[in-house]
Each structure stands twice: as structure tokens, then as C-alpha cells.
Length: 455
Image (cartoon, rainbow, N blue to C red; front, top):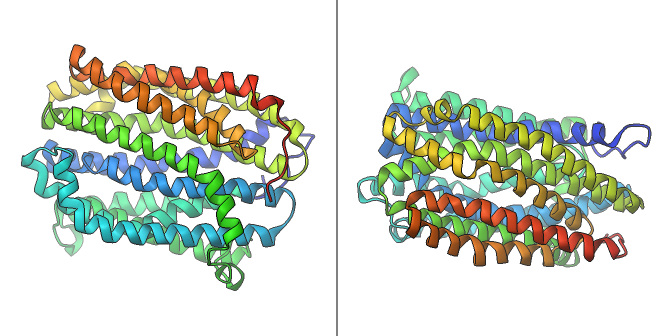
């Protein structure tokens, strides 16, 4: 589908959905693949302790990316509505405000994260025998945050105009650079310095610099509405009316993801009590879960963007069909990935971990919660469609309530009763609560509201 093209009536909606979704899922899988392959290189070439050191950074990066995803979520909804209404000048104004805000967050993260990485990792209870490596890795990643967050944000803005191909190709380049450079720096191939654990962080930085450079060249060559040209640069400021809308729509999504990341920090602290093997298992399980969770999130984002474009084009009656299609595609795509995860759980864990007892531990943890990502996907689709219309506060409160009042207490209580497995038992309980509450609000309240454009 041509970027930003209106949804044609003659085509079945599921085809339009998949045309938008396909490149985004590929891009997200590539993003996960980059982390996965780096995890394999670190685990196999540097050992379990090095993998544990990188795993300790996961909740911190997720916290920062969550803030930017909030900005991008609000901006992409507004961009989708403006693009559906054929108003490219509004598209650039919204994008300029979002990029300016994203760069400000990235610079603050670089300064504060670089200074306080040591204290933060100690507060998380990072095992002492991996602490020095974890601090070095964390500081490098934090200093690179402005570029990394811009890369994440710009992909969201492009999706707002229906362009999922450019982010996919950018992610392909990023993955290729990362996967080639990480082992080369670990081993010192080709005359490069031998940098150990720092190799993974530096390869990640180089990968998104290359990807951003290619995107800038590609978009200018195509004269894309979001090309890095004089028109977009002229909008790089905080346009206050637009900023208020971005914050009103996007920040609830950002707050939700921040709460998710804080909950992950609490859960990691519970995992840290069980030692380096448990932390390594935690990192390996997260790698596999990402391959299922990213497509589920992509389906929800697709429903949200297509919904926003339909609203902008004055066709709110299509929201019901978009919702049904999203729920059905989640069943097919996420369900298939869950089945594959169970079928190949042992070899998947063995990709990251060389110790047989740790592989067995990680596999058992994956089995506890993997199926519940299907529930997560359905809840996310309902929330995504509601966000397309600007309804964000109540879905966010429902999600935050489930995380704060269900997930964290359940993880603590179940870990007391069942040990390490209890931490993962909290996920199915939480996702089931999210789905039930979202479905009730969607059916009993939101569907009865009048849907209008925001821009």
C-alpha cells in the first residue's frame, strides 16, 4: 500500500490491515533479532555473567523508550488523522513538535543516566560479580540515548502516514550492522580493538546511526512528507497547541509503559535475589517473549493508525470492522507464534545459555507465561482502537491499575509461595484482568460515544 493512501473500499479490510502490518512486524522482528543475536554472541562468546550484566540494563532502557513511545503514540494518532484529511502541513507541524520533545528527553537521559548509572544498578540489586561490566555497558547505552530515542520515535511518525516500509528497511540496516560489528569487536577481527562486553553497546550505537543516516537520504530522495528538509526543520520547535494534544493523547500511553517498566524493575529485583543464573534466565526468556509481544503490539498499532486515518477521512463507521479484523489477526498471528514458542522452547533457550541447568530453568519459566500474550494482544487491540479517537485516559488507568494492583502484588505473593516461577505466574493473571476490563469499557462505554477529529 502506498504510504498514506486511503483505505480502498474494493479491498477486503484484512488485506489492507496486513499490507500495513507486514512491514511493521518484520521491522519489529528485526529489532528483536538484533537483540537476540547480540545476546547469543554475548552469552556464547563471553559467558553467562556477561549476559546477566546486559540483562540488568533492560528495564532502564525500556523505561526511557516508554517515554518516547508515549510521545510517538500521541503524535502518530494526530498525524494519522491529519494525513487522512489530506493536510500535509499539519503532519509536519505535529512531527516537528514530537521530534523536538523526543530529543529533549534523550539529552536529559544521556546526562542523568551517565551520572547515575552506578547508583541505579546498585539499587536494583545487580549481582556484585557482574556489577562493573553492567555499569560500563549501562553508561555507554545511556550516552547514546538521544540518537536511539530519535530512531524509535521517527519510526512511529512514519507509520502515522502509513509508511511502514521505510522503518522496516532502516531496521534491516541496523540489524545487519549490529550483528556484524558485535562479534568483530568481541574478538578483535579485522584489526578492530577487542572490547569484550562493551562491544554489544558500541555495535548498537553504530547500528542506529547508520539506519538514521539512510532514512534521511532515502526520504529526501523520495520527497517524502516527513523528509529531513527545510520544511520539516522549520517545524522543529514546541508548537504549544500541538504539544498539548500530543501530551494529552500520548502521555497516558507513555505513563502506562513507564508503569510497565517500573513493574519490570520490581520483578527484576525479585529475580536478582535468586542469583546470576536466574538473571541470565530472565534475559533469555525476555528475548523469546519479545518475538511474540512485538507482533502483538504491531497489530494494536496498526488498528490504531488505520482507525485514526478513518476518523480523519470522516469514516468513523469503519472502526468496528477495524477492531474485529485486529482481534482476528491477533488470534492467527500471535497464536501461531505462541505455539512455535512452546514447540521449540528448549533449543531457543539454548541459543543464549550454555549451562544445561539454566536452560532447563529458563524453559520452565517461558512455559508459565507465553500463552498469556494472546490475551495481551487482544487487550492491546481494544486499547489501540480507542486511542485512535483520543480516548486514552480510562484505558491507561485500567492498565496501570492492573499492573500496580495485580501484577506487582501477585508477583511478590506468588514468588513467596512458588519461588522464581511465581514471578512469571503474575503475567497471565495481569493480562487476563486487562482484557476483561478493556472489553467491558469498550463495549459498555466507548462504543456509545460520538467520534470526532482532533486536528
